[in-house]
Length: 473
Image (cartoon, rainbow, N blue to C red):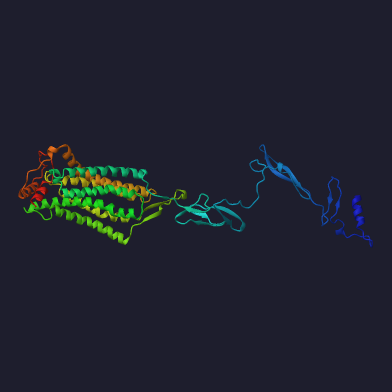
């Protein structure tokens, strides 16, 4: 009290010895109070408050309020006595929003401009700036952090891929078998079996079979303008050559026996030269279509970024391929399919001709099997149009189907002949000559009394009628 009195006395004016009430205690500080702490008055004459700070804590499954500090003239806080969720002593940060990670944009909270939510730039988006994500260009994908775009890797069908190994193996074996048959036919070119098979059309057909196998290598080679042009030319050409030759053969057999029912005169255009003209006329239709295609849409290699554009950008790939759509492929193979179907129709029509007289039945079996192959090809090829493995599946399916078609023709039409020529030369002997009248009579009688081909000493079931007519021509 002595200190307070001294202060009051010092403030007494000399005139009237009276002190205004607001100025009695104004920003004064005494040395020590009763508790040993300074006694302070603020500018308003009020003593500063003292507050205990408690924290609600859970200790050993019990709850309590524990003093962790106090506030008098300033804050005194004992952080070691504080506890936070999880039992940690670390003081959590008291901020509105955490900083966003790379690849995340800030999405502001409505009504709270200084706060935001972090939103990941997903899919093919990248972080353009603090607040925006943008889509990468169609030929780019975001990097791992989604902070920038990078080029999408380019893939193509590799020779070492399982999708390529199997077709190549089939094609190599097919080419070797074809060359073996051609070599055998050339070596025994003047023998009766080779002659009876129609040498001219046989060599044309074998050429088509060879091209069917060779197409596999074009389909697997790395696409460029040259390879794409060759694909357009040879993909349908090999099949067109094969089926044009078979169609000419079956049509010739059909016309001969139909003519035999009505007249003893030979039908027109059954000579080897005429057959070659007909065959190459059919082939020229395929080539004309390809030429028109080149004029309308020149071939080119493209990179397709849609075939393997997956939901996961890390798996996205650009596919290097030729610019041949599914519709273009249908048009390319359409004429070959038409020849195949027409040849099958003629094979059905000539199925009743005696086996001794012609090759109609082997050709018929060949065409029936070929139709089955291509009926299986269609759903597999077009059913995978939405698959990310589309290019691999379709290329493999197409090449194997073309090779199988060639293998069916080679195996059913020529391997039996080669077997007889090489291992049963005693059956490769000339047949007795027939007059045109005898041949036509046989054709007429076969129509009235269909029977199985009679047993011949040479074991051949060849086109005697056609051979006889060729001889007389």
